[in-house]
Amino acid sequence: MRRIVITGPQPVDMLDLVGPLEVFKFAPEYEVAVACPEGTTELQLNHGFKISDAVPFTRLTAQIDTLVVAGGPGANDELYDDEYLHRIIGLASRSRRVAAICTGTFVLAAAGLLNGKRAVTHWAYCDKLSRQYPSVVVEPDRIFLRDGSIYTSAGITAGMDLALALVEEDHGHQVALEIARILVMFLVRPGGQSQYSHMLSRQAATSHPLRELQVWMIENLRENLSVERLAKRMGMSSRNFTRVCLRETRMNPGQFVGRMRVEAAQQMIDSSAMGLKEIADACGFQTPLAMRRTFLRVLGITAGEYASRFKRSQSQTEMHR
Image (cartoon, rainbow, N blue to C red; front, side, top):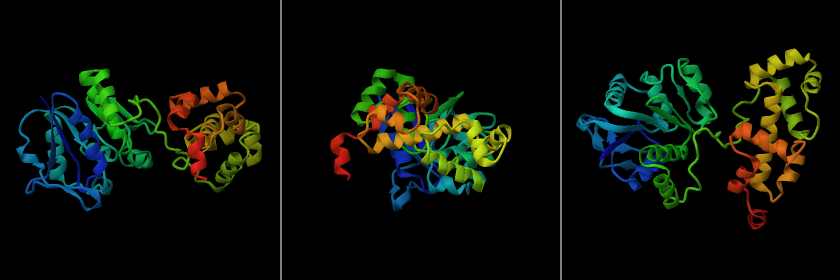
């Protein structure tokens, strides 16, 4: 039996813990335990709930296959005492692999387990993770990723994607796919796909002129948004505008325009019954093929694939009017 231990700093986000637990429970040859600090057999969850049959850290003496550290309010506060981090380091040293769900990544970073490693967390916390732990190589758009024996994942439901990936690693694709079907998860998402949330707000410019330009761009996506035209609107040279854009958005102008067009197209796909050709035209893509390529570059999937997963039917659209 492979022993899976799931824990996290209290209070733990309920879905961060229960989501992966459900995935592992459907897989063969796993023994799953929920762990808690000494002096209690309860693990506090958010929303006032608790798990009352948890295993204290001191009773976890056997070898661990997979240690999972869940996120939540307790991880977000980052008030980890030295004893807690010492316990996590000890458990990790006896684990074949270690995984973090959402802001559980901060616990691994605080414990020094991510020094020099690539990692991801919920998109809203990626910048904070980069600032607080500069030795961690943060890859903000990933759903989950692996660096050696350490696995990290984005927010909440991405923890289930990561758990499925771990099952697939142990038992093969067919077993993971069957569990996804049981849990009515629409697919087993590869970790290299981008987090699907419309994330431009996280990357929004801090300077007022660039924010104004961003608003103008959203309203004029069908226009020719060349570097030269955008620079002229900002009253800058193309070279200086490129430098400012990179500093403020971490993207060059071409990437920035592509991202905005993709996000506008995502919103249309999510909320309308428009066809992809209409959406491509409305968002300033020269052709549906150009939109396909840009989606692939930005999100890791094509516009058609995104639409097949998220697009509302005509009846759903009418129902929400």
